[in-house]
Image (cartoon, rainbow, N blue to C red; front, side):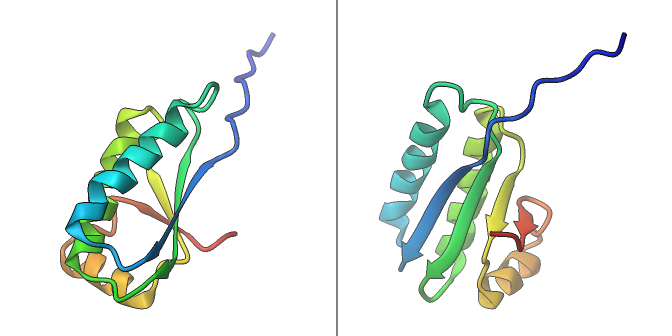
Length: 107
C-alpha cells in the first residue's frame, strides 16, 4: 500500500507595490509572517508578486533576501518571485542572489 502525502495548501501571496524603503522592509516581513501564520498556512508555499515595484534598487534586493528567510523559517521553503521587473532580476544576478528565491512567471 502506497502512502500518499497530503496536498500542500495554496500559496500565500504577498503583493509588493510602490517604492520600497528600508523602513518598509520590516513591515513587509511582518506581513508575510502574518500571512504564513494563518491557520493551515504554515506549510504553504510563499509567492511574492513584485509587478508593482517602482524603481527597484538594492533595498528591494534586501527585502527579497529577508522575505526569503521569513518563508524558510515558516517552513514554506523557497520564496517564489512573480512578475519580477527586469531591473530587479539584473540586480539579484549582480549580487549573486538569483538562487535565493525562485522565479515564477506564472500568475
